Length: 412
Image 1 (spheres, rainbow, N blue to C red):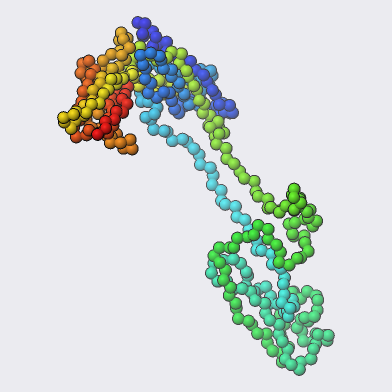
Image 2: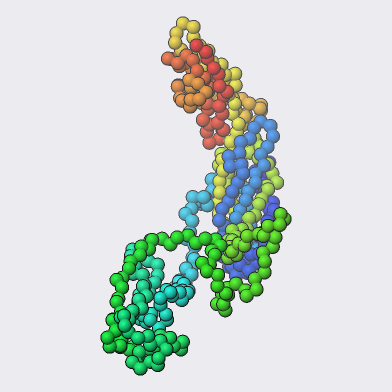
């Protein structure tokens, strides 16, 4: 009767740590949900003296109030499947509407009007007859301006005479871009079309320098990005002018901590008032977590752990037979007395493993087995392996923890 009352009193007092910033989500949520139940230590072991205190963390959302989440710890198997064995339910996530990519118009690089010494604007071919420049793959035809027509020898110079042939006067400084094309003068040699020239354009553009300098110093215009009166760069400590660096765009940093708060998940930590000792039943224990929502809806999830009692391998000895090629291991196995009459009592009818390895750099391997008698004593013999290191291991059961002895070396 005393033990059952003590087990019922193993109610856990909660230390809630609600996440701040999730009030908007909690107001709209109607159904509580539990994501995980974690117990530490995962496999508690109780000895003859002392006790073990559990720490239970429950991650839930949609729970309201001081007692929004409660837990109950009791011995026995869970009445339903544990939360760790359940498959995670797919979250109802609505995909964001897809938007077409923003198309930025490609602007050609500004080209300066540079003419050859023997050319004038009136003798350049119209833009409709010149192939456009651009970067691409393979070969592209480079635009070549038409050569000026050379008059034959003996032709008088008409640069100062009025234009009577109907062709545009090359010495006229007025704009002739809107005038129609005219025919050449009779007797004048026709303009020779130069053969198209080809230039190799690489597949990838060359890297741009950090501070490109103009080829020819030109006055600043209204389309230039630099101010008309640029300020000199600030001088460094040693008097040298600091090199100008281009301003980089702002870098967006994604925050991961706020995502947890936005989802509404809260961590509830529980520290049970009663500690586990040797007087509690060993075996499977069940943790029942209950979450209550704002509308009174509740949900229960289960978790389990194994409570085991301590075992000890004591008085282990390793002996080498002087006459035969064998090694003999002796010792005893004890356990925490389940009735509480003594601290440790003999643990009989238990199987033990005899482990061996040739040196410290090798892995342990199973060399033999032995079984304890009613008094917990054991003795095992291994043939063919006289040197190396030896130890004994007990694998444990559902109610008793495992144990392993220290290594013993046998020299040849």
